[in-house]
Amino acid sequence: MTHVADLVIRRGTIVDGLGGQAFVGDIAVRDGLIAEVGTLSGDARHEIDATGLLVTPGFVDLHTHYDGQSIWSDRLNPSSAHGVTTALMGNCGVGFAPCRGADHEVLVDLMAGVEDIPGVVMTDGLPWTWETFPQFMDAVDSRPRDIDVAAYLPHSPLRVYVMGQRGVDREPATAADLARMRELACEAAEVGALGFSSSRLVTHRTRTGSQIPSYDAAYDEILEIGRGIADGGGGLIQFVPDLPDGAYQPVLQQVFDAGTDAGLPVTFTLLIGNAGDPVWQDAITMVEKANGSGATITAQVFPRPIGLMVGLDLSINPFVLYPSYREIAGLPLPERVAEMRKPAVRQRILADQASIVPTNPIAYLAQSWEWTYPLDDDADYEPDPSKSIAARARARGVSPAEEAYDRLLDDGGHAFLLDALANFRDNSLDTVGDLMRRDDVVLGLGDGGAHYGMICDSSYPTYVLTHWARDRASGRLSVPEAIRELTSVPARVAGLDDRGRIAAGYKADLNVIDHQNLRLHKPVVTYDLPAGGRRLDQTADGYVATIVSGEIIAEHGKPTAARPGRLVRGRQPAPA
Image (cartoon, rainbow, N blue to C red):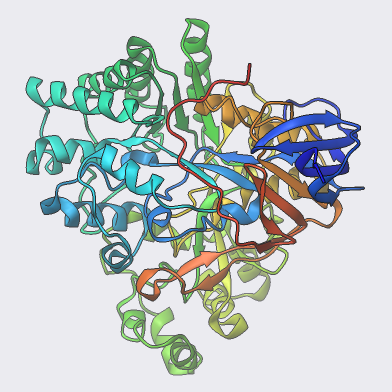
C-alpha cells in the first residue's frame, strides 16, 4: 500500500502561528516537513484524530541553558513536556566552550554560581571531549535528543579562552585580545552559532562569589565580538543588563550601538519592578528610538513573575543564612523537619538573624514577605495579595518569619513558596500583559537546564495557554495571539524562519493540545541529574501529542522512544 504521508493530523483546530483565525482542517507530514494543509484524503503511516483539539506549531524558547543537559541527556525536559520543540541555549554569556582543559574548573565555578547547577553534576555529567566551540557543537550534534537545540557563543568562556587569568580577573582586553575574540566569533558563526550572548547582571556571580568575566567588558569588546559574528554570516546579540537603579544604564545603549555598528539584531532581558518608579519604560523608549533609526532590538519579557522557588529541599529558603538553621541544614529532609517542629528549635531559629554571607546576593531576597506566596497544587502565579506571607502573618497576628517557617513545614517539608521578585507590578501581571502585545517584545527566560534548585520556569508556554489565553479574568490573549507569541515571533527573532508556523514546506514541529483540559502541575523535586543531582521538574496535562520533524516525541504527557531532535546550525531561511 502506498501512503500519501508519514503522518496525518485530521480534523484539528489549526492555529497557524501567525495570529490568523483558527480553522478546522488536516495536516499531512512527509519527510519531516509539512506537506499539505487543508481537507485531505488518502491514508498515512500514522494518523492522529484531533477533533476538538488545537493543532499548533511547536514552541520556540529563546532563553535556555541546556548546554550541559544537551550533552548528558537525550531529553530536554521540562521544556519538551510543555510543547517546546526548539530551545536556544548558551544565554547570559555562560557555557562550556571554548575551554582549555586547565580552565574546566573556572567554567564549572561560573555555571554553578550563575545558573545553580551543582558542580558534581557538571564534573560527572560532562565528558569535556572538546576545547574549541566548533568541537563543542560537534559534541552536541553527535547526540540525538527529543527536541532541537541551537546555541549562542557565550562571552565569558570566550574571554577566558583568549585572555586566561586576565579574563577571569576582568582586566581590559588588549588589541590582540580583541582581534582573537573576533576571529573566534567568526569561527563560531561559521559552524552554526546563532550569535553571541553576554551579561552585565550584578547577581550573576561565580560559585565563589566573584563577578563573571564579562561583567564590565568594554564597548569595544562587545563590538569586536559582534563584528566577528557578522564576519561569519551574522546572528543575534543576547544581553542581560544589570537591574535598573533609577534608570536603565548606559551599558544597554552601548550594546544597542554595538549591535547597530556590527549590523546585528539585539535581544535583552527586561525586568519590571514590582514597585517604585516604572524604569522599564526607559528601556522601551530606548528600543523605540533605536528601532526608529534602523536597528532591530527586542526586549525579552517573561509572562509571569520572575523570582525564586524557596523551600527546605531547594537551594534557598528564608532561613538559609541563619547559623541556627545551618546547624541542621545537612540533615535528611524528614529529620530536619522533625527538628524544626520542636518548639525549642523553632524558637532558636526565629530568634536568629541572617549573618552568613552568601556567595550569591540573591539569597538575601528570600525574605521579600509582601511578594512571597505559598504555591499549592493549582500553581497560581498571579495570586491575590491576601495570600502573601506578609498578609497571612497579619491575619494570624504573627511575624512574617513565623508564617513562612510554618508554611515551609507543610506537606512534610515539601512545600514551596513563590518569591515573586519582579514582573509583579502592584501585585498584578497587567503590565506584563501590555508589554506582551508589543511588536518589539518577545517572550523568553524559560531558563530550562539551569537554576535547578531555584526555579522551574520552562513551563511558561503552558502558563501562557492556561492563564493568559483561558483563565485570566481580564486582559486575556486570544488563542491565536498566544500561539503567535510562542511560535513565529521567537522563531523570527532567532532567525529560524523555517519553523514557527503551519504551512506547506515548514518544519513539521507541532503540538496537538486539549486546551480546555490543559493543566499546569506544581513543580516537584527529582534526583535524576548526573551523580544523583537534584532539580525541579514540572509537568502538565493536556498535551495530546508533541511532534518534532514529523516524529511523535510525546503522547498524553508520556515520552516516546523517538529522538528526532538535532542541533540547528545557523539561521534558517523560510521555505521557498
